[in-house]
Image 1 (spheres, rainbow, N blue to C red):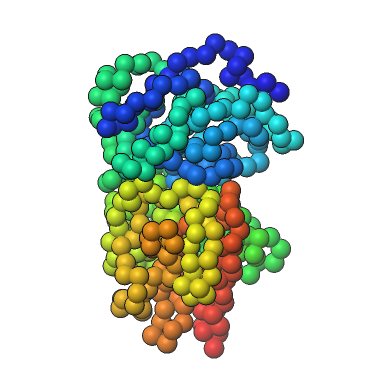
Image 2: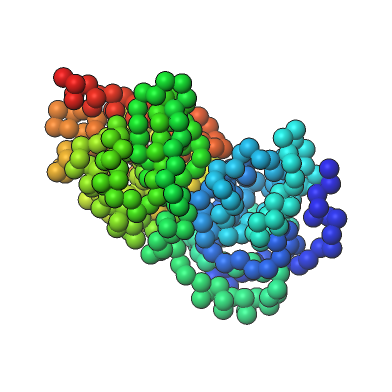
Length: 386
């Protein structure tokens, strides 16, 4: 099945970083221009899930794996309703697609959704540059091939620091995902840019998931009489998400168990009184080693984040809801990868992780965290019934 990229005339494309470094390549996907933050992902598979992850909103993703597109695009693996990346950068775009579920090529899907891509770029050199210099703004164009003129426009693009992007990606209306089999629990899930696999992982454990738009009130959450509350992953700077922090503090005031993933971990950190900061180039891929400090087990995790929580790795911090402490840590750079809140007698009340236990795509080492959420909700139910 030949790729449509090689069935039409090749078009030159230019990539320019905000520090002036430029790369020439060949256009694929849509023609035009794209601007955003340049980041790299080390995943060797799962490009469809990556491109449809809302956490990549306003970002241009560089694939470090050199060969992309060989499995084409199917109608089952999208993690949301659309592609969210601003642009896509690869070295070698596959000339053929070969997978029994493939419906069309990666090139065709990017064109259909108006996403600009650039191929035949030295992505190793580009990744090393970002690793050394940090994530930065970038532009891709098939229209402006003069590096200096494109650079001027790149520097006019808004930075990721201070960006509040939740409203762009959240669900417009509340929806319900029914529990698989017997309904055991009800969870209010606040959509900050959720991946479809997260509510699916809860539903398959007997949880009825009520997906709520960002901006929902504590009264709307409590009206559902939930057994627990979930905050999802999402894009942007957590320091700009004041409304979400206030809502989570109200959730904790109500005594509801909480589980957060990725952006939900950063919001939890802020709600507990910790700060957040931007990482030099972030963690993105499906091969990041993390230690669970409770069990001392090491997990290989899927990650996608450019910000982190600034919390002490040792000891605990007193809050009005109990004792907060770091529960998980990245073994590459000691970045906080999880938080937990415990009662004075040591009972786990709420927790969050910076990575993706739903792992689409990625390893399943961390799937136990959904079971941990069930344990916390079960304990609360037993306390209420006692």
